[in-house]
Length: 112
Length: 111
Image (cartoon, rainbow over all chains, first blue to last red; front, top):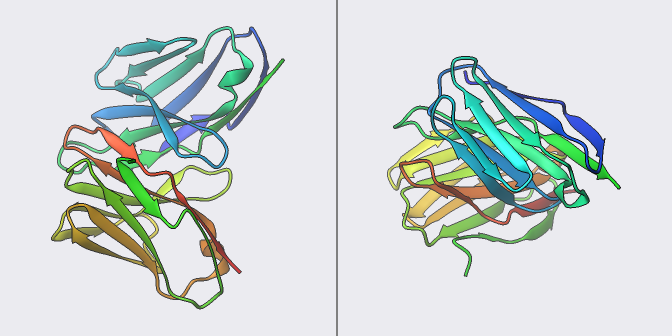
């Protein structure tokens, strides 16, 4: 059974600081996803990582994937208040059995 | 129009009632999914369908049933709602290459 663990679960940080959210998963997988969710809203896709060593960046967010360690990171650079949200990683099963397994999420609060 | 439409957006129902949540998609994808999200938690898979004739249970299917009426439509039913089924429910669709699209969600409250 695939398990996905995120840490920390809660993160409160000041504007301008850097921080990293970690996502570990238990079995081999083809794809790793990062989503953002604002309270009561749907999921906004941030990144899809497909291969070992993949790195993607969008604005102040950068995601990376190490398939050997079964670890993905979401790095936040110089945080701003607008980044306050809950961030989820999710892992897709291997081709032919696609279904997302989600981590429990990291609730990020950026303090001005 | 949204690619994945869920109805209703909000629903309050009484314990023991039967309720159906509906999902339709315009992406033309075969794969559809129902997820449940409890406050402060991630999404858990209830049921998924890879085509009209293929229905599979997810992690938390007890107390739920589904119907895939057409490629574009996938409904979730609670046969006899109970309070701990109060949650935010999401429908999603995907293509074979892992491009997922989520609906806006249905907030269900069982009193």
